[in-house]
Image (tube, rainbow, N blue to C red):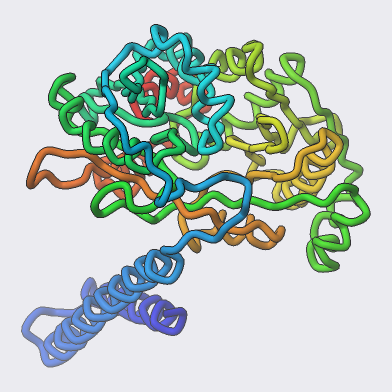
Length: 431
């Protein structure tokens, strides 16, 4: 493809030169006719090359979904045991999130629980954005909670009314140690969709085989941590060590804390989001996470000459630490502080006694996926199920959506103050 791109650039240059000649040529002369024919020939070649390049890109983008469709076991999370069933009567009901009093205890004691199932997240989502959450509960005839699917309802001018389990986060979906309970809950979702008048419900799961045609474009990248820094350096290898040590010549400084670092975090994060063409969360979203008693969150900031240039938002769940959000200023790429910051983060995770570090989700084989893989992280395959009415196309709530591509391109040109003012109102409706 690289050779094709080079040839395309050369042809477009030739076309530009010929186009300039027409200003000085008289129509219907032999030279005018000759240049016109040449222009037509080059235009046809350009069109064919652009079509070939587009086709090659589509094949390349589709390949990861084929080659990496099966999950790799990281042992950080437990998958549903397909052979373990309840084999008794269950009752399924839809309940507002706040009214399920035994949910917190249930997810604490269930091995299929994922980080985003923590009830604190639904509470923070409601406090920050006002979105209502529900739990589709499965209970025994004696009332014991056997499983559930938490999800949040959105009403968006861009995407309509829909549900997501769980929004703004990496995970969601069904929680139960019983396969037949999981399947019953998933099969009940279409009735819930109709009951609430939703256009669709998206289930962000890591469990295979819960429904038809799941999207497998995403994977979480997880690294099993050694018990000390010296062992980590040996595991990472000389190539990674050389990369993160490049920052040392600029004398970076690091701070890890909570609310006292929020302003510096948001300064870096909001500018980077604007540069990516992505609306930014309100600062209150991060403040509410930091202030919640049941969420163990920290901020890390890297400074060059006392100016914040890189940042990360870290959340710990027992022996797992996750980084849902991270940013580095474009102007600071020359300092290599992003690599340096991640090395400091891994040290912090080891100090806290974590066994796994979750680099977050990425599109398979994309740039961020490769960045995380170089640290030794392994993919944990995601299966995103979409519950829709019959013969309805799957919604694209991502930059591949043509509606959003133009928006992303325009957003990058906004002044930072305008992006920070408008972004929170827009991102509220994008999960």
